[in-house]
Length: 258
Image 1 (cartoon, rainbow, N blue to C red):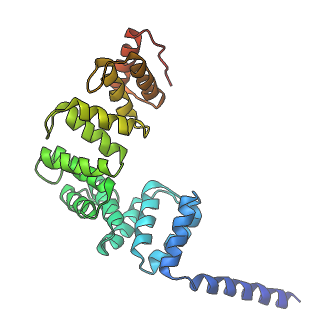
Image 2: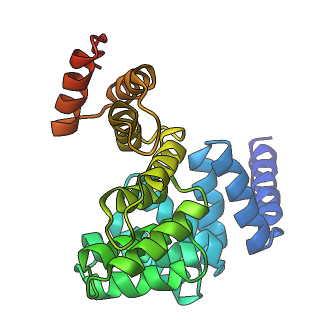
Image 3: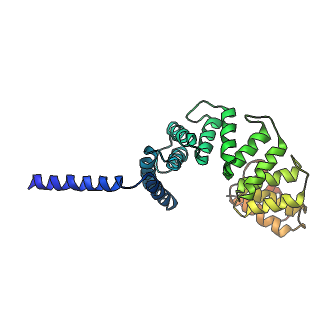
């Protein structure tokens, strides 16, 4: 009887393994995406690992991302680098971005700003918004390339146009300061507002200041108070937090400290 039970267990295990092997790499990758979207990260990693081992570039990117951001696994920059390199070699934009981030921050590999810049460029040219933003920062700060404020604005604009809050904030800041583009408070207000409604803390602060000073929009203390308080609730810190509290004090508004 014990031998019969053991045989049944073995047969069940073989059946399950066979069923898993019936899925193509693409199907496993899609199952991983479904689990990831449902925030079932451990299950997602299991699917991604199977698909990645079969050479699926998207799964390799997602697996690298999970290791980089600690989703469903312990953070492991070496594995993030390993899998992103495999996906990037197949031209996957997400993998190119993660690999670029590894080189930029020296995660799992020796820091190399030029390689980071080149990889961000590859991913940005495929339309990946976060890579566009990073490429803009490279041009703005001279990371892996010469400083080019106009190119920075071009890539911030591309990222902002895709709805990326960080890109919208950076583009707004360029318009506000006149960096790489003609100064335009109206457009600065427009993009700060876009990012602020996506809960971008710094954008909420600057939007509040626009209302306070009447830059790009009519002066409105009520709106200024609303956005400055919101930025503080969302964790604004440093000198800007000090300034936000000072502005609220001047408007005789309650200062909310979180």
